[in-house]
Length: 136
Image (tube, rainbow, N blue to C red; front, side):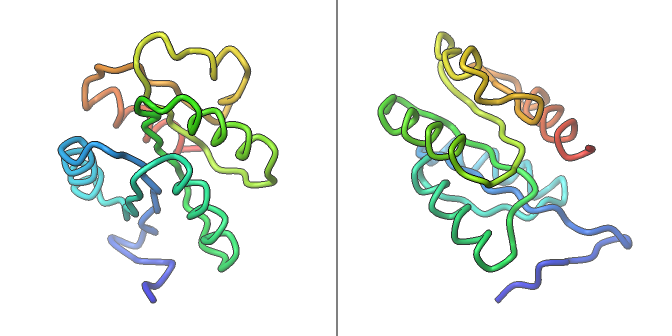
């Protein structure tokens, strides 16, 4: 079992749960986050991300941030949104989706502790969102 509190320069390394089904994008974003000294756990879709959140919460290791790429399966995305909003889990979320999928923002899914990034986006946009949400 990996220790929850990893130390580097006397600061805790923050844990990010990242859901991405596209292998190339998953590798590049994971690498970018790891190079910025974040611990990254990768799952393949938003439903697996929710299951992993519940699992991690059960052992007291809830990540500090969740990044979810909704991909093209709107039904799974809607189930994820419903599950997350009905749960007692409190984790800031970055949702990545195709431009035009702002429905989850309009429904107030993200609230104050979330960011919506429309594809395509620049890597710095993602890193700025990560830093913003983890600085609170």
